Amino acid sequence: MKNYDLHIEKIRELVSGSQSKEVTLQSICDYLKNNIPHYDWVGFYFADHTNQTLHLGPHAGDPTDHTVIPFGKGICGQVALSNTNFLVPDVAAQDNYIACSIDVKSELVVPLFVNRKNIGQIDIDSHIFDAFSEEDERFLEEVNKIVSKLF
Image: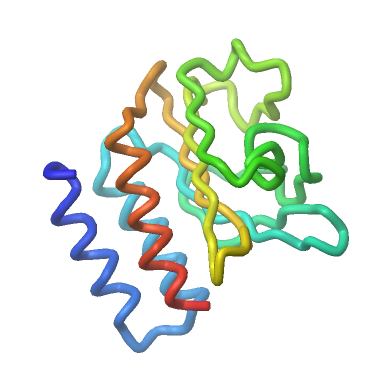
């Protein structure tokens, strides 16, 4: 994660600050979108396990109509059920994809665990085909480990 080490330190600083959870999560979204060139949309979705839905939390990037997503629907909904990362090099090739914008070409979703329970996820969209690598996955897993301390 050599390329992302400085970003990890910044995320740690944000989480250890005295801001509210919502403000901290928004700051993380803004930071990632503004400092990693291929992160064009960054957001957190949080799970409502009772109703089997995800709810959009803090995010940075173009507005989206997808503020509530049923478990199983789209990439985010699939991650809510699988509890595993989902890297999509070309969203147009996915049958179960919810289009947020015609500009989105690839997507990476990484679940957020607190006490080993999937409470949500970080969702990253890019306007570049095949924008994400295994390094992005490891980086976002580390981001989520840090973020989990807020809960």
